Image (tube, rainbow, N blue to C red; front, side, top):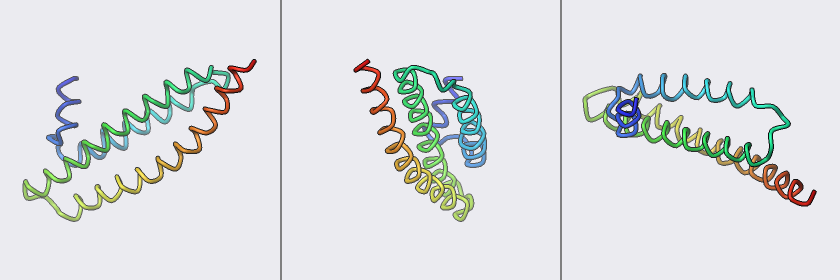
Length: 116
């Protein structure tokens, strides 16, 4: 397992595997699990979950980005490499905006919990 994690991070897996398995499929599983978290979860646990999701998203994005670059060097399709990188940029912008909103809610909830 750690070899898979490292190979993805280094961009050594194929672009298809990196994008579809480590990006789309793993992201869907994480999203599903995150949506199963009860709404009554303590704020500190929510913060921990958000941090784990961020770490996973960074790992996934970096691996896909590097795999796209390696795909071009190996003679693969430039179109799919640039398409994959474009989705990473769009996803990063979307995630930053979402994180800003989630962060403000988590901070407000945490502060409210501290005053009670």
